[in-house]
Length: 484
Ligand code: AMP
Ligand code: MG
Image (cartoon, rainbow, N blue to C red; front, side, top):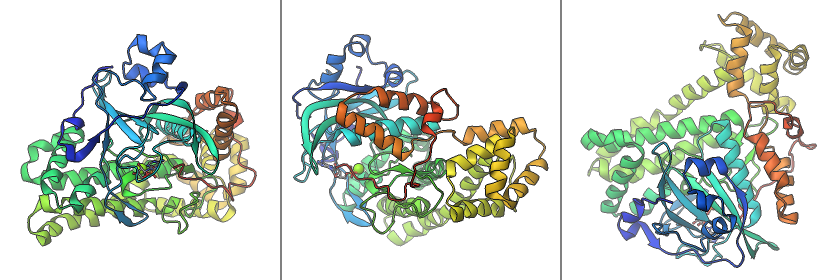
């Protein structure tokens, strides 16, 4: 692999140089061939599962790779922790893909680093498989996300509640720069490192800002806000609940990162929380926009000293940008929902229509994905029409009238809706069944079959119907765990 590492070229305050801890018996468990193609993994490596297991367990460090554990801080559930960092991950380096895009290649679960705070630096197979499935599903759904190239089992147990098989995930991300990375230096008052980090990030993710002179840090905040809004709106579109939107889990590039206790919402309810540790529901489905804004405020605070040495003046400059967040969010959200509803332009009363549909789903505990799938189908199917009429009653009629007033054929509307309404999502009960199979038998047949369906979420494949069923209890008691 052709590494070209830029982050490791920065000063050592940004990371610790450290190697993965070798594992006993690495075996390639899941492999993402299309991503491997994109990354131009050399043929001799790609075709050798033993070599792949050595490389993507961290047992063999390839030439050009300079493993580091990156430093970051973060607000966890609202409480600031000045030092977190990669406690169980190693950034192997960066590679350039077929289209010229730069990617971080990171191992997760590859052993302790100086950021581990006494923990084992390892990852269990369950969370590793979950990250692989969820990120593949999100990518296919069209949601910006980090991806997984591989899951390698280690042949060693990790000790959680009970001993479970250990695994290492290879994560591919457009970078691992987080809001928490900026907080790490801001909290230390290290303005020099902060400026280096901002300039590095701008060059890597927002190069168009380099020409903007002293204004660039303000514009940088604006760009990050825009990407984050686009991201959260996409989460809301597909019903994704991240579960742990701590500032260290918020990527500056606007990708979904750190698939821990994440899950998909079934029945529509903004208060849905599945994470066992989110007792207060801070990261509930419907809170995600508000939390994104809170996180952005923490990010903007870090940049104040670079914007103006006079803090009050800097706040005067940044304040209005932050205040704009809710309006801008609403605008992007409404544009997304219009498409889900097949509306080609926005009219004032559409908001009322949307709220009455969502209100009805909540009140009757109706599934979010199924509803929008059936609405899409109702344009061409009598069965779907009567089902939706039955469930949405007058909302359905209002929606139909609104569509009829549009200057678009049913076929065009259906095409628009289908692009935004999946037929299948990674439902929690299927994820759990597949993970259990991986843990117990070590067989990948089920997970591969599931992935095949999830990779075409807008199409009804032969096997799709096997994954569209709803959980018997509506996920009422479903819980996810951090997997640490
Ligand atoms: P996460 O909940 O995965 O976002 O992790 C939060 C922090 O805890 C990060 O600094 C991680 O590196 C660290 N961490 C999580 N699990 C482990 C582990 N098993 N060993 C060492 N550090 C960990
Ligand atoms: Mg994290």
